Image (cartoon, rainbow, N blue to C red):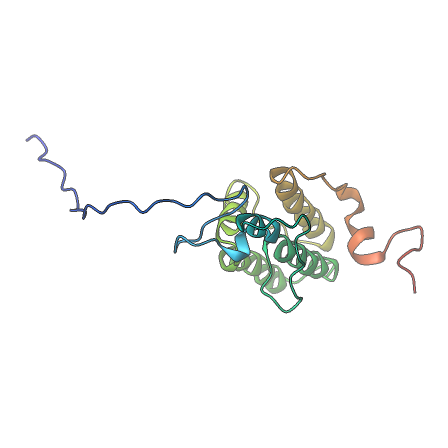
Length: 174
């Protein structure tokens, strides 16, 4: 028996709204408006028709842009990694793996969250059997984002010096 026609949902024909000209780097949210947590503040300012060369700095009590959110998030994640046990219990390992997967789902920048979830699903599940392994994994995750953003990669052999013990030259000592 030959298959019948595929039912297509009826769609209402709507005149498309004109799409505003967006500055490079502006990401729209599901509501069609610029997404604050997915867009760098300099890109948002570039959308305005300002003639001033210098962009004003936002007050510190404003919601973060994508760059500030990213820096803060990586600081938190690397700090968690630095304090992770050398030999975590199976329970701690399960909690940490669940945390990383949940973090990737709840991250406020929706397209960043999707990228991180996809990266983890493509053979990069959290490695949490030791502090060293978790630190290497976190550094690799951060470097994957750096590459995507065109930034310099960090030497993952130095993750512990950067995030746990401080630089060997003593500049972090107190």
